[in-house]
Image (cartoon, rainbow, N blue to C red):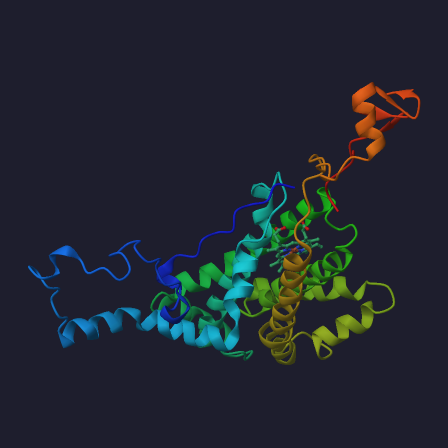
Length: 321
Ligand code: HEM
């Protein structure tokens, strides 16, 4: 394995107490020796204002350093941001982060929509038209949330396809795959429950169809559709239930599961693409092989290319764990 040089952390982001002092004679005057022009042009004394300005410039770094000394976050962040990724990592590996970004957009725009939306059967439709027609940037935020939900669903499927075709569901990442499946179900639940919220003709009838489809599931189906409908007919109670699921229950679960998902990604690393072969670990060759190099034989057999006794000397196989 090639060893990468440790990245240098720029001095500007290291708090002054942790900075390495400069070597004597480097970047200044040699140790113990006064600069030759000290008598002719003595250094100007810094004014109080200059000193304040300097301290002001260091203030954000000092504050960060203060927090960091208490959280010990820089070690973790450096480890995470500069961690090694397998050879062959490509654009397909950005689909997970793209899904995460789509979720963050949904969460942010959703918070602003919630400030103006009223989850009542008589008010919901009007609150949405109020958002679209009167609230500044309301149409933009509503549009971002509406289209963003489709974007997130498309991205999550593409990301799942990437992990499937790259074999990333295999040992030791099975648990991350299972968490991903739950995230997929929760994302679909978000899209389904959000669809009813405008409470217009389309969302009303589409939700009836969706609830009935859920009811056709084996064993739990009928219970699930009863739970979703929250009454004999789709109405005000259904809207409240969908709103609670959409606003509180599922986003909380998604945030917790994304946390677990990311933890496992950082802990286990990502899978190499299936076409990347593992590099042979650099270990000392056994003495018998060294001898073979000298006389062309191992245990009496001729050494043929990279094969000894018919078995490959170099590690062959997939680099993906
Ligand atoms: C909210 C939904 C999701 C988010 C935000 C998310 C995010 C991520 C990110 C950022 C990564 C690392 C980079 C990458 O490989 O793309 C990752 C890896 C992974 N994700 Fe997801 N993911 C989600 C849903 C899913 C789903 C639905 C599945 C599968 C059912 C899944 C399975 C995996 C697996 C197995 C890995 C490890 C990949 C590897 O080792 O190469 N994820 N996820």
